[in-house]
Length: 283
Image 1 (tube, helix red, strand yellow):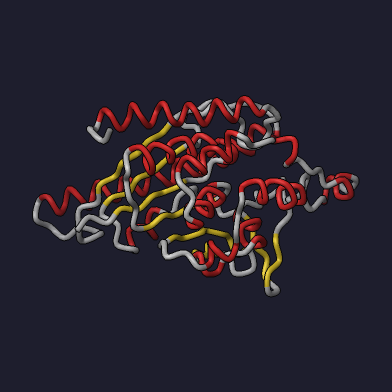
Image 2 (cartoon, rainbow, N blue to C red):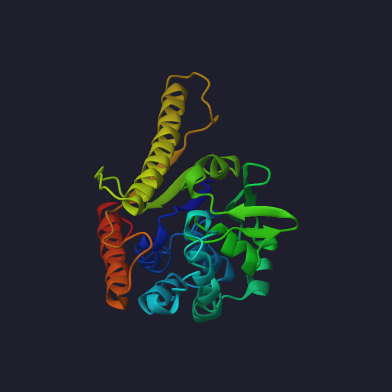
C-alpha cells in the first residue's frame, strides 16, 4: 500500500501560497496523507492540519491574515543593535495571529494524524523532530523563530530556534517514516538572483542552504531509484516517488504589509494546484 508524506517546506510568509495548494490537494482532489512534515513558518500550516482543519479553512486563515497585526519590533533590543537579541518579537503573533488561526493546542496534541515538527536545538546543535503530542505555543514559536529577526525560545534550560538553515524540508525523516511518495510544496525562490544589502543577502544564504539541501536529497532519491531499477541495492530499499510543486511566490519572506498580497498568494496557490492536478488526472 502506498504511503504518502506531505512535505510543507519552510519559506517564510511565502507559505500563504502553500495554503492555497492545500485547499486543492486536500479538499478538491481529496488526496490523503499518512504523514506530514514541516519546517519554519510552514509548521503553522502543519499545526492547523493536525488540528483537523480542511484545506479551505487553512487557506481562508491566510486569506484573512492581517500582517500589520503580527509586527512587533523588539524596541528595547533595537537600542542595543550590534548585540541585539532580535529585531522583532512573536508577541503580537501569539496575541493576534494564533487565536485568529483558531489554534487549539489540546486538539493538536491529541490528533491521530502522524506529523513531524522540526526545530533546531542550539544547545545540542541538532535538529529535533517533534510529534504533535509535544506541541505547545512555545514550541511552535521556537519552530518559527528565525535567527536575527526573532529571539530564541528557552525550554527546559535549552535554546531553540527555527531549523530552516539546516534544511527547509526534512525529506530523510519522511522516508524513515515509511513514505513511498513525497508530495512537496516548495516556495523558496530558485531564481538565483543576488541582491546587495544585509537583509537581501541574509535571505540569499537561506535560499542557498534550502535549495542545495533539497537538490542533494532529490539526487539521492534518483540514484537509489536507478539502482533499484537495475536490480541493485538502493539507499532506501524501495522506489520513492517525488511530486514537487514549486513556484516563485511574489511575497517577501518576512516583510509584507498588504493583506491583498497574501490573498493573491493564496489564490495563486489554488490556481497552480488546480492546473498541476489536472495535468496529472487528479481533478
